[in-house]
Structures are given as C-alpha cells and as structure tokens.
Image (cartoon, rainbow, N blue to C red; front, side, top):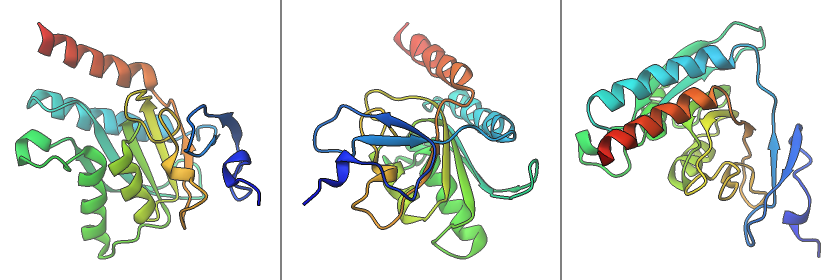
Length: 189
C-alpha cells in the first residue's frame, strides 16, 4: 500500500512544497496569487486593524464569492478576532467570517468562495474551511507555531479528508506580519 503522504493530491495544481512534519501531509501545493488577491487581503488587513483597536489579536478575514472574471467577485462576509470581546475561544476571524457567510447565504457549505485571512489558519480554522467546502484560501503571514496551511501541517490539503482547498500563501505577508509584531511588542511593554 502506498503512503498517501508521499505524493501530492493529483487534483491540486501549483507549486509543490515538501513539509518536514512526521504524521502529517508532506506536501503543500501552493497556488500563485491572482491579480485581485492583494485587494481582498488589504480588506482583511482593515478588519485586523479594527481587532487591534479593541485589544484583540489583529487577525482579519474576508469571504469573497469567487469569479472567473479578473477583478470581479463580491464580499459575502467579513470578520476579525473576537475571542476576548465575545469571551469565546473559537471566535477567530475565520470562524466569525465563515459563520456570517453561512448566515448570509443561508447554507453551511460555501463552494465558489475564497477565504482571505491575514494569518495562516490554525487547526480549528483550517478544519472549519474544509467543512465549509471553501474552494480557495489565501493568507498573509505564516504562523510557524500553529499554522495548518503549510507551516506546522497541512490540514487544508490532507488526502484523508473529503475536501481539499487551493492555498495561496504570503499575500501582503510583510504588512500582516508587521501588524502582529507591533501588537505583541506593545503588549509586552
């Protein structure tokens, strides 16, 4: 029997990156950015700045209806971290945005959407994106301590799951990373 982690999922196309984490998927198939990715990520960064203003970790997310026409698409929902404000450890920006998108569309599955998030999703948020059947995920800063879209592991493209998500890492990463760095620098001082 062939180990499914020794080869990438043939249904995903893009740049192949080998991960070095035993027991987890060994590959991230990274998609190149689309022309509109920076625009949508800038919107997610606005939500992240809002989070910082109220003392939340500055992470923002935007769910966009995908479009085959460059420059098209519409925002379905937005979110920012609200864990302290809502006293809810699950109220990460991605969860807030996915819940709002589901309510707005009247369904729990979100095919035909792209999730933009300023920080690489954790296991909870990556799992929620898979369960929501998001087509594509674009993130800004990598999270080497908790990121499950290629840094710590790759839940989004795990061949054992029934849905895989196209991933585009690093869009506006310097801006997203600087926002987080400054937030934590201020908290430590």
